[in-house]
Length: 420
Image 1 (spheres, rainbow, N blue to C red):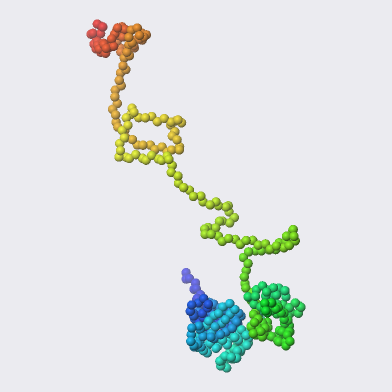
Image 2: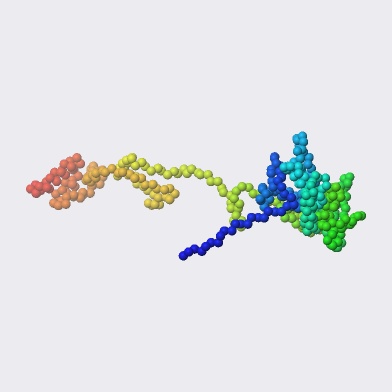
């Protein structure tokens, strides 16, 4: 059966290359870098993106330009003259150095960066009419983008909360946008600056009239977006006002407010942060608690097992002198000690004929009772003939064997038996 034809493989579509206001090669050196590193860079909005090559769609680094303080083209330290290929971006918390291929490329980068940050085309740069036209297009796109966006310094807080934020976090900025308190849909601008050691807080009203935002000052100024409002305050104060950018710090411990019943005051309660676990396996959750292992030291037993005998050695134990094993509880050995049976080779001993019992020794006359008659060992024959001889007290013990043998000889002969 023929197999069904598989559909042809379609190559995966590659990601579309992002569009930028301006893009070109750029060498970057950060505060922690030892040397310059070359990237393909692109400017979009107020962010500068860095790619490994001009064919990549995913950036590897990015730099936010909203915290830009100034842009300089001073020669690097230790150089006698500037060949016109260096410039630096001084941000609020760091300084980034750049190196380009030519003087024209440096002027283009400076012009586009200042255009998107200040929302105006710089006039102190050496640029061609074509370059100025490109910057005008970038400015229009940036204004349209910002009209749809809310600046990062816009926070939904009250008048008092805005003052507390600027006072508590002065390193984050001193200009903050918030909703207006009159309910008309406008916004308000709160600023905080230091004058001779004392803080000066000011509030400004911004009216929302149609698509425009009008700053209510002595000479009202109309803006197309909220970003333009922020840019107006920054540029008119010679950048002494900095937009408030809160740090995204998150708490690690849960806390809550609890009222004290005794004095009626509220107390902030928070659990202590858990200590970091040491190395080792974590205990199972929900299971029984495991005790730590106890080290066991081997104890040498005083009762050691008896080694097995060597098979090459021969043991001869006589039968008559074999010791008998006796146990208190019978023939069952104790279970505390193992019993090892030894294999012993017993020598063959010829059985000896049983010995005849010795005749009893007759006591001397007058020293004891008369001996009892000795039973006759002869199975047949006249036993009465031997009885007088055995019962005679005068019979000598020395002559007993001799008389006994003589009696046996006489009994064995039928001719002499009648003489006895």
